[in-house]
Picture 1 (cartoon, one colour):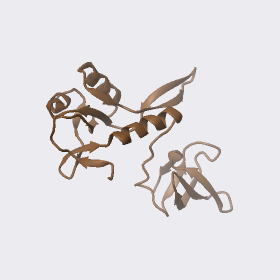
Picture 2 (cartoon, one colour):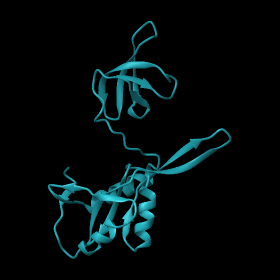
Picture 3 (cartoon, one colour):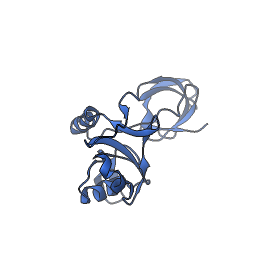
Picture 4 (cartoon, helix red, strand yellow):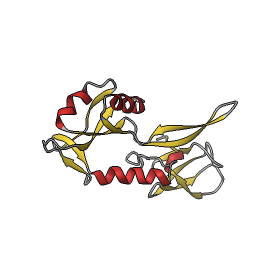
Amino acid sequence: MENLLPFKSSSTRNWFVIYTRPRWEKKVDQLLQMQDITSYCPVRKVKNQWADRIKEVELPLFSSYVFVYINPKEELKVRLTMGVVNFIYYMGKMARIRESVIEDIKHYLEFYPEAEVEDMRDMEVGDRVKIKEGIMTDKEGQIIKLHGKNVLVVIDNLNCALVTKVSVSVLELIN
């Protein structure tokens, strides 16, 4: 939470985070910009495959979150925008985001457009997981070590213990 600062009322503009309806991030970003409100919805590029074609699409980097650069007078305008649920709060006040954090996100996505955010709060050593894609698709195992965005998993049903390093993004909790 070091990048979140309590909101201080002033006439200057600051970056804030708003929570949107599910799957409304890009639409809210567009609606805010139509009202001349500076907003930023970081997106990542993903290749989706259908039966007849492969298409590259842009998905929000953060589910249900959009950044807005506003002054206190624009707060109500943002709140009344269709798809906006609320502002994110920190220490009882609207959470202010440092400009450097926004710039870091933009810079990172410029060089790594396929980046994604993985939530590891739900995974722990000992959890049972299923691999969703790759050479080990549908294999089940147990997490023995968490390491960054990768985990070490002991794969069972192979008549031996196979330990493999797997990205969190291809795991599904099954316990």
